[in-house]
Length: 284
Image (cartoon, rainbow, N blue to C red; front, side):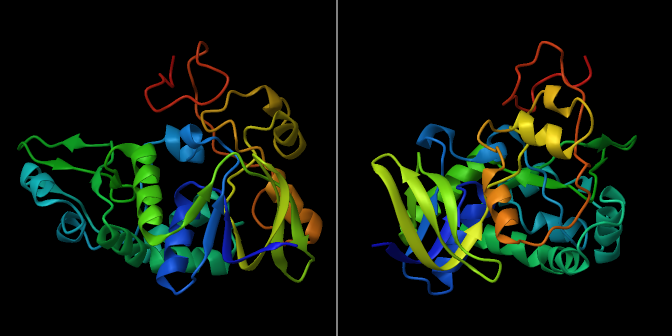
């Protein structure tokens, strides 16, 4: 007999935990997060990123309102020009070459300021992202698009999310791999889980797939990206291997975007094959 929960979240990084915490705040009584990584590797590619946040804002005063009083006092001569909804939309169109889902893009842009405000109210803390430009008069400016990042980077953000989830009664199950999705092209109703004690089923009122991309799978990089993509080094998590995405596609999930496009950056030839952080020399 399948276990019954209100909300099942697949993936224990920032997106998954934001969804889990929001579900609890919205009244869901039993929220379970399943994560295939062991506890000390939870966090997906967030663990290896500074995580610059892009959001609509009104400029210096608006950005400063999200920071702690101490950080504000340290940046009295820092200015940031406003980042408008039109700019955000234009940047999304440019980076996706116009292939982004318009409804998704609109939601992302219109809700971005409220989202970071909500996270701040929950207790997340922020710092300025890299890209500081010193001015001749001693003042400084930052790129208005990705002006802030979590204090302590992506790993600290994920650990704060987990702590918040623990306080709200969100159940995190590590070493728990999704072996299959329950449902059809109309609706996903649950999942088959391979946990530490064996295989079982979870039925859920809502299923949220936040399992990350497929960049850690050489086979899927070869399938979807350009020639020799299977030879690339991967900066992010070894656990983002795309099998949950493939399961959703097999059920009939809609697709969008540019399937042979990817974000890539130069890395040191001596860098490891995967899981390198932002300290790696990207231009060696």
